[in-house]
Length: 559
Ligand SMILES: *Cc1c(COP(=O)(O)O)cnc(C)c1O
Ligand SMILES: [Zn+2]
Image 1 (cartoon, helix red, strand yellow):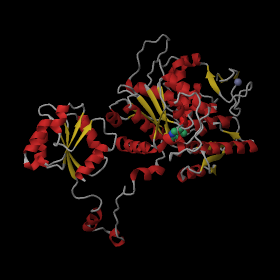
Image 2 (cartoon, rainbow, N blue to C red):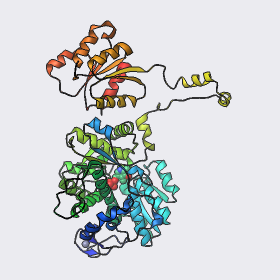
Image 3 (cartoon, protein in one colour):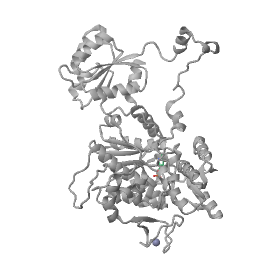
């Protein structure tokens, strides 16, 4: 395998030893792997066709000499899923979710663990130390268990108990540090030093950065399949010219993900597989956003946050150190942006993602989705842009923030009835599962996509009976027949528009008092607004659905 480790500071190149973390010439800890890109560019496209879709398909670009089959758990090769409903809500159709939940321990840290532990195993390591905000420790523990390496996992006491138990279950020693994550890292470093144990060096770990690259490689292959390849005009004689998304959005803590992923895109660019790299959008939790603060103030280095104030402990790296400086350059170079969101915005995004796409992400990943929503609203991400958002799992600890107390309904069967439940007993037990009659809502819109979207938003709340009409005339027939409690009405429709529907409704005593919410795609003129005055209960803009306003309005009218 032909690659070497080059020092970022002095340029010295040395062979790779997984256990040596510094440049032999200047002692810098910032080094990167450099491969023989010309020869790999010749051979890799031909090899990929025969290889399984996991991260080892790019093994020529990874720092592991011979990937040990006994350590593999299907790492990498996660699906890229088009978020059709979110896209519709945002007016931005090409939104894709890189579903890293489908890794062995359901976070993208599995890639890092798979490659790093494989390299350490090759180097003969049997015991190691890592500090973590949770997910790294879980992934490392799983792979360390397979490799027979003992892991000392230093986590802050804020890490949810379910995550700590998972770490312990794999046989790692959990060390709870009551303090910030940055302090936990210091304690771990001191422990490793005293015992002369190998310690993971976070974003400076060559194998970790190299592992993260594979997310970029996969995205390029997958989005090219989904959207079709980019133009073929290539000066080089590459057989493949792949596509890149316009944006890569990820929530960040230490920033290792985007650093590695940017390196991946950059390597594909260098090899002529793609012709540009995506804009990077790292998103932080507002209560711990040292990078975003520095970015907004135009600074090259970040002021550490000593007292992180976020319930999303996975993202509580207060001191990004030099990673920010490197990432800042990359974000600027790619035309990207740093952004932050509040915990509340993240929890809301988590709920929206689950209800709209059936994807349950963990709060840390929801930060990225909340960032996406914000960037689309701000017009930074454009409707024609393609966007890939990194998504991970582990939802459990966040439910209380999102669902409240009454999220389940109880069916209680008495013990004597449970043997052979008579029909009436069962009916009685089920009577509190749902009311006999749901509020009836008519959705009137000529666009099938909008009807589907409104239906989905309402259905995600469970308790409505829904009807649809595709134009004004149909709407009036439907209202007469079904007697709805609420009408959600579009204004611009062929044949008979929303204004005429309103006039007809108000003209008949039976329908004059049915509440109406108007949903419109266009800015209304003063004249049109005057026509609606006193006639309707609320006016909503299409694309406004991401706020909870629409549902609150519906509930207040039919509840
Ligand atoms: C680790 C992690 C992050 C932050 O990743 P970095 O790239 O290291 O900043 C974000 N979300 C989840 C779910 C994570 O596990
Ligand atoms: Zn050096």
